[in-house]
Amino acid sequence: KEVVYDGKGPHGTAFVVETATDNPTRTVANIRAAFVRGKGELGTMGMNDFLFERKCSFVVGYKEGVDMDELELELIDYDIDEVFLDEGEINIFADFKNNGPIYKYREEHDFEIKSFKFERIPLTMRELTPEQQEDVNGLIERLEADDDVVNVFHNMA
Image 1 (cartoon, rainbow, N blue to C red):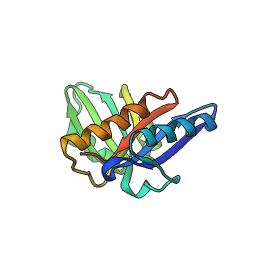
Image 2: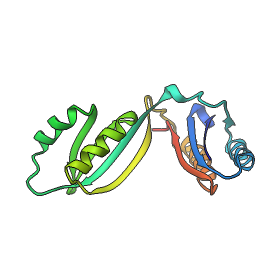
Image 3: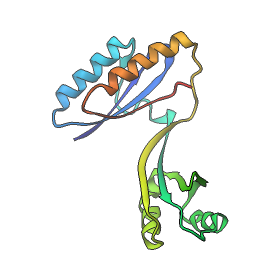
Image 4: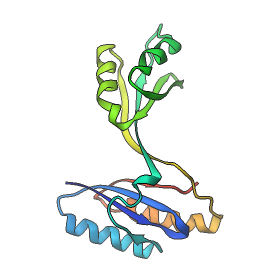
């Protein structure tokens, strides 16, 4: 079962923790304990949704002869946010709801998928001192140490 937890980290940071578990009772207890030990607080589900933008990102192999400007024009119909070439791979970012049409386009045009993931991009970043960053990094490490945690998103700069 996939469960998403929201919380407040130290120094006013916001967290969204994605988990996959066969025992939600155990997972919520572990997540709550990590927040408490990490000087944070587990919040209510969805409380930080407005602080993060959900995106999908694709990395596909570059095919010889592909015109990046032409590709970008074609993908505009799929409501992409950004497409660029980086180290021989094409990176595509779009709103997460456009995942299916972009995936289908990739299949129809025979682009090899290198990686795909859903991300939560913070709309605003929290600037912290190095000491404060250590506190937040401690919480991130505690959360990521749990076997049920899939992704940890935060708004620390």
